[in-house]
Image 1 (cartoon, rainbow, N blue to C red):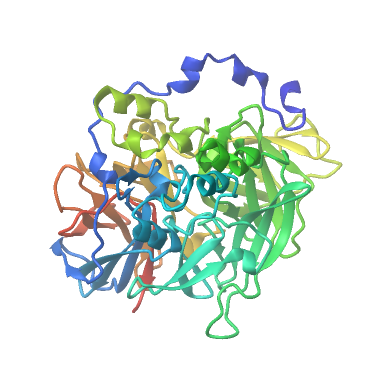
Image 2 (image 1 turned 135 degrees about the horizontal axis):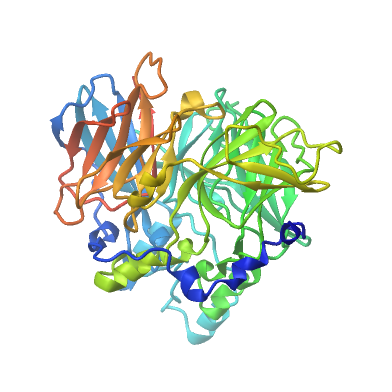
Amino acid sequence: MDTITHQNKAPALMKSKSRKNINHFTDVHGLPCIEKIVSSVEDTPEPISTNVTGRIPQWIQGSFLRNGPGKFEIGNHKFNHWFDGMALLHQFKISGGQVTYKSRFLSSDSFKANKEQNRIAVSEFGTVNLPDPCKNFFQRFLSRFELPKSTDNANVSFVTYKGDYYVSTETNIMHKVDPETLETTKKVDWSKFIAVNGATAHPHTEPDGTTYNMGNSYGVKGATYNIIRVPPTKTTAQDTLEGATVLCSIPSLDKSKPSYYHSFAMSENYVVFIEQPVKIDLLKIVTGKLRGKSISDGVFWDPTFNTIFHLINKQTGVVSSVQYLAKPLSTFHQINAYEENGFLVLDMCASDDGQAINNYNVQNLRKSGEDLDEVYNTLCRVFPRRFILPLNVDQETRYGRNLNPPGSTATSIRIAKNKVFCTHEDLHGEDLNQYGGLEFPQINYGKYNTHRYRYFYGCGFRHLVGDTLIKMDLNGKHMKVWEEPGLYPSEPVFVPSPNATEEDDGVVMSVVITPNKDKSTFLLVLDARTFEELGRAAVPVNIPYGFHGTFHATA
């Protein structure tokens, strides 16, 4: 146990592996090329009809909204990273068993500047903006010393605050969007309301509409992580983030190299922040423009640090004095968290290596043959895992003994006064291995977020993007799979049926991309209980593979 009692340092055995072992996690050959998944398209701002086959339930009334990159080149210049493409918003409007489709590029300042100047005028995560050719040499030289301007290219998700829809990325800018027209109605800057330099694209919402999020701030004492609370309702019709407060601030373990986080977890009484050893080198980012390097150059995996779970009381803002440690892991998305009998159950999609984010550049996604196989085999698989954290650790709690209740293989062992070391339980059987793990997890959020639950849905990853849809039943860890060769489904979203009494009474929707066939992408609707196809709506335009979506009910 000595290797894990230091100041959150990981076991030394991480370094004993050869570089080859670290870099090759699978030995897959013959992956099909998916280049068209990251090809630029035109938007379709006026609704068009789709070709429905099968049957889409009459009770579904509303819009399935999706977000993701849709333009990967500006003029003669190309974006480097998948996260850099210009945001394209999609709407599948469903009524009476019929579906119309439309899309619109987000009218962000970044998009407008790029379009006007016909070049990459604003830096993105993996791309440095090009110098303005209209400036003289001296002006271009001086511009290298400016701090990078934050992009407002909100291409990650649709989120809601106070009942309004916003599109979001991880900078301080969101855009309020009309879910009916997809038009941008207002630009909102988090830093105008609270002292944060950004917020995640994955807030959590309580049943009453109160919303929690996280954002970093940087000061003379280094980086801090801030838990944000936004009230549930507006005081005026024009309200956006008025009333937002910082519930608490947590100093980064490494002041100049805070952890990167894409999301966080929430239970009934706690926000759970996962401080993982995917790090951000602030000095590299600040000097990036001078060195001609993008933000992605400052993101790195440091497996010499353990993962830390921080628990923050949602009512008081008090951070638990107990640090829950786990071996180095990387997580983008959590599945759910809930409290039961004095324990906090924390479920997430996680991997044992954190280098994936830098491998998802556009060039890699466009590779073919052995080069494509090599990219895939150097990515660590992501699997659903459960940690169980004991909430009642005090001076009487015994050392060196598993504190968790029987019934789970997850363990928690007190190793120091305020430190508990945790290991996980796999939330899957061996059969998930053949589907390449699971990402983009979703649950019946409205009824079961922060509560004990049974089902979650996600994409299997036998390729660089999802190529199957999976339903996992935690009772027995059984899974159901939807797949068709050559098709790539995106994040599944659960929509409950009216008056549902069972957790999985409803449908699962996913936009399925068809890179080998022109203009044949479709909206797929599955019966969530049986996981069998009910119907699909084929769209007569090309759509790139996107990130996240939500269902906006109108009935």
